[in-house]
Image 1 (cartoon, helix red, strand yellow):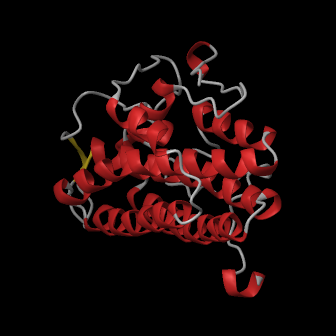
Image 2 (cartoon, rainbow, N blue to C red; image 1 turned 90 degrees about the vertical axis):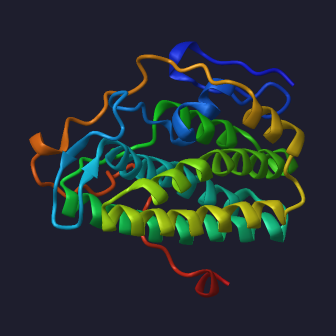
Amino acid sequence: MVLVSRKAAGTLFVGGALSLTLGSLLYPAMLGVQKVSGAPERVIATPATGPLTEADRDFVVEVRSAGLWEYSVGQMALRKGTTKAVRIAGEHLIDGRASLDASCRRVAGRLVITLPNRPSPQQQGFVATLNADSGKRFDADMATLVRAADGQVLPTIASVRTTTRNSLVRALADQANDTDLDDLTVVEKTGLVDFAQVLVQETTAPTLPAQDITPPPPVATQPHVVLTPPANSTLSPSPSAAERR
């Protein structure tokens, strides 16, 4: 298996097997958003719900970014999955990410955090890779990519959950943890995860591109806006899994 990338944008290609850019998988916390600075503990706002640090703000932004691409992958799994287990995994991705995104947007509105309206370039590359797949290759690539991605996220969620002093961020971390664990469980149940590749992603040092995305400005300078997905975003509340069946 060959790992390739296109410059710093992290665009992914299909080369006979799932082509995952190692730097993209590990670049920051897998969620695809460059950190604002090297001072994650710096308090940037003091709302009634508790002090808000740079790490807290980055986490809220990252949750939104992750939801945008994984929701799209869930929709693809419903359309393209060749097994019942893959389609069930798609249902869980759709339902879990829609619910988590709604919570994320509520938290961002209360804490005056500007959210992205589309996935990062790396995450767009993940979606493009899976969009080009078909048949059993899509099934295997989807399961492995989601497993590797969400496995990378869990340490970040745990860190935020144990260090934040903001009650809204703490609650969001709790929900994100539950959502990620559910995603891991359902893709593992497909029996298609390439754990050898997942292990490579988890044990190799990252290469961080320096100019991937413009970070949001400090919270104190942002206008109070509540962002909603753009017209080309597929992230929206969806029927429950039971309703779709």
